[in-house]
Length: 345
Ligand code: AMP
Ligand code: MG
Image (cartoon, rainbow, N blue to C red; front, side, top):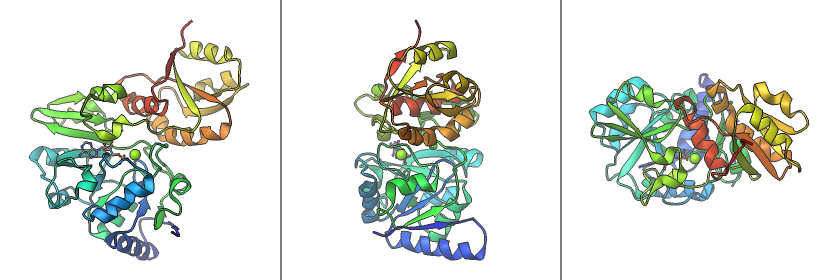
């Protein structure tokens, strides 16, 4: 399949024509990659089982890993999901934005989209290109991240093209994603919500709308998913560079000493302040130590570029488990396949 790659800005007459063509591709059952504020998405008509099927084929995604359905307006979810008062309270505060809410599904949603579950994930993205596309298409758009299953999520059109060129009809290039990690995913409960996947929206922010926020044990420990993982996508080794990545649980002095002590070639992911300490190694900048937003923005790009280092192993510091770093911890621990070494002597 020939993939058309088109640069878009949200306004302007020329772009109107592009959105109409992209919307037409979606309505006809095709695949369109588009930017969101979190990562790039691989979109298809969420109400067309054959179109949704194509997403799984293009990504090599396991069939039991459900898709998030994107809408231009929170109330558009009513066409296919049971929207509760709490959903609307959350929408009021966080949508459009990087929050995904799991709701009971209506029969119109094909089971391909929900991985056979009786719930459906709903998100209303803030990115102007995503919004223009969904609005022009006039249908709910199922869209997982636009990467091959298992590899780091794409935060630029070039990343998406590297994985999916020849597998999708169109890629809309809207520049780099501002946030850089995927949306916060929650399931509503009687007295609050369960955080299934951490993102830019933090537990304490959710707690300003719902009473209790329970962090699923699988967020910090992929092995803790139990017999029925609450969010199937979180059970896979994920986001991983091809090169082996190992996390080191250490202070910055201990991490520097640990790397110094390595005999063979290795790559290093380090905080900006520490880059000088690894001048004799191949090193990449994760962002400033106290700047989780910068680290989230950089993480997936750095994980992709790390493969160019041509080293047998890459070491990175284990992030803290505090709220602000929850999304980073959650992604990098999966990228490392849970390999964590103690860096203390
Ligand atoms: P992705 O679109 O690749 O960023 O992944 C979507 C995430 O949302 C995965 O972790 C899915 O497991 C999760 N998800 C989607 N639908 C549901 C659902 N109905 N229940 C629980 N988790 C879901
Ligand atoms: Mg994904």
